[in-house]
Image 1: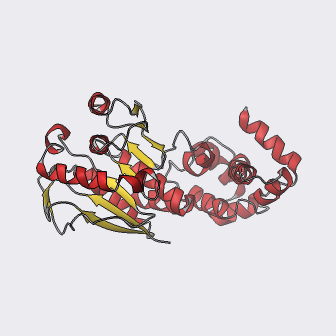
Image 2: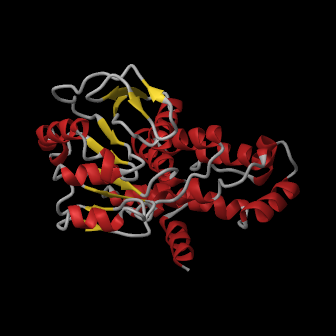
Image 3: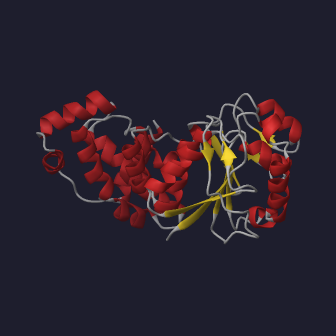
Length: 305
């Protein structure tokens, strides 16, 4: 399924706030990008003019992702006739956002624009550290959090800014297309796929990928594709094109974890998902590749230590 992503373009837009997430979504092959705004061309923070911007549509289709990039001076560029046009447009489509029929993604000071439109009242949110005080002043009813890379509340996502827009885009790709798609994009971009504080269940796919060793990546690719499979160390090493002994050393050296423990963490993710969906321990264990509910219980206990 293809997701439509709509970037709102205003004069003074921070180039990386827009292009970072846009490149990230474009690499995922499951997103269709649109650039909309009150003008057909806008100057950016780096002096480059961006064109071919479509008019603001009357509405957005359900399932869309709406992106509000930041600007390099929010006190100036969010107080212009063009910004006022966008504010009134946001107010018109507010029911779509609050009913969670579309997802809102604010990058950096883009949260200020959302706040001015009344979209963040009662919402947990964040922004760039230089803009936190202003966001609180504009939206005293918002629950503004500091020191967050990004945060979600009722399908409204806000991020700290600049490169955290890429982190958030990767996270949304994970949500919409799965961890393997997000991981593939992160590797293509040679960026670290950061964890989100509210998604520890996907951490094995994220925490142990902050390296560039090709043999380990080959082993991880095989394991993440079929974590429930009855893997033998020799078979994993063969996929990685190294010896079992060398693969064991590589995992300890670069990841600080054994091959067995890495696979167990992947399986725990699947088991926890099945348990959250209301399945019993036996079904969850079988789906994740554990030999029995007892083995699953022991793995969960080790994970808590």
